Length: 157
Image (cartoon, rainbow, N blue to C red; front, side, top):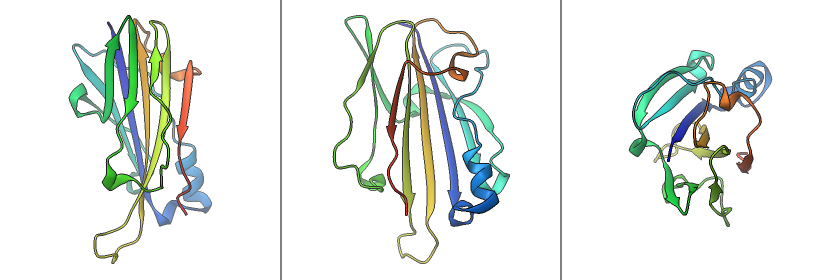
């Protein structure tokens, strides 16, 4: 089964929680055109406040993407992992896994809030967007509306 994975991580601090910086962060894309890639790799994009949310693109092995992908009965089961350490904001009940048939794709968003271990630094934040397609795709697949959208973002305060 052909699987296409795009993982976008946007990260920021309290400095981008409001005003012009928050506008730039909120305008950051949640889907990109795919580069030509061979083999089982993921298209990974990182955007950070310190770079003005400019995208930095790489290819990584699928095993490094924090999402479970399993093929069963001609369907692709998709379920992002959330480590207990990264449980903020609270996720009392997670939605079920998504099962895709060829020709479908899912956009799944999760956000996180972190502080330093000693509480001496300001909060920092991540938004992970997983765009995952089942079956053959074209380069612009993640620029359109997804078949399934899972919004698992919580309040970051």
